[in-house]
Length: 467
Image 1 (cartoon, one colour):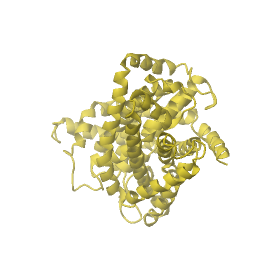
Image 2 (image 1 turned 135 degrees about the vertical axis):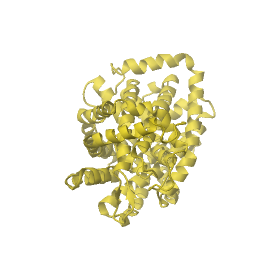
Image 3 (image 1 turned 90 degrees about the horizontal axis):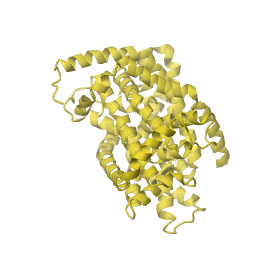
Image 4 (image 1 turned 60 degrees about the vertical axis):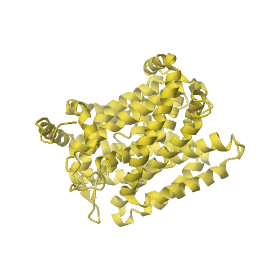
């Protein structure tokens, strides 16, 4: 049954992530870059300054500050997509897929600037009168009632796309393959029961946090995410330093293979090798940094600020941290240690092998710690996204019911195959991207006007420009 599910979802995901959607995400990002005339990129330093709290307004509407909003969004993006997702990208598309992840990240910074500026600019009230942000509210408040089917479509797809199955699957996998099997607790073949038990434990842990709402999620994420990013980066940096002589070669291979597709898994996607590499890279980048998907604007829409552009600038940092930094380091660790040629490994197990090879004895324990925290914080944040989608569809008083469905999906993700899990979530992400990108393109002139006004005030020194 699981094999049939993987086959059917794989067919749909392949078609959903065809050239039209890639053109919408990458082409839309390029459109935003041109529309903004590269201006947001020039204020990158100011975006970092906003995170210090210097511009926080305690009287502004919202639930969390800029740093907590970024941490909550990064808790969703810096996670298994960076660790297991990058390994999947290399397994399916070869080193060249990483290049197209870079391209997606650079244009994705402009996409996030536009989507998250709109998430503050067009916040709306839910059925209980609470201020909310996200693509569904942007569509309702910014485009009007005739576009409401698009808002409902996003929210419906979000119920599936915001499930934590990939995180649960990969965390279960690394616990099984790196702890339980080596210790002879279970055999490599018979692991359903242990996966189920792990899933139930994860469900209990996540449940303690997600029923506390976005404030508790923001506090937990702000505490754990920065430390884990530093620990993970330090670990990968050690691997790269000890293999520094081959780093230039693999950086060159990433670029050259992007236009050749020599290492594409021919069974993974339809179309030519280069086209497959591009699609795999964009697909994995979207899953990792979520630019254009719409989930990120739900977190940033909760920020305490009355300056939409300011939140857009903060959101721009995510693809830089998530994809250009963390994903690249993961990819290089897998490549320089040589484990990427092992076709029997996939997902987080491949990354674990890279850590085991690059950092003997300590590598796997460090990765397990990072994976555990990354997976859990991602699961915390996604519950907030999904509950907002249900609240929009069925009323704010019903949104907590999503958490029960969400908790069950943790167990389901723990026992399903990685292929089925990725296909289900990729399909939902593809559908979520359509209303998010269309509404953002239509409202882009509003963002450009707001940005022009904000940057002019900033340049005049109205905010105290000591970043």
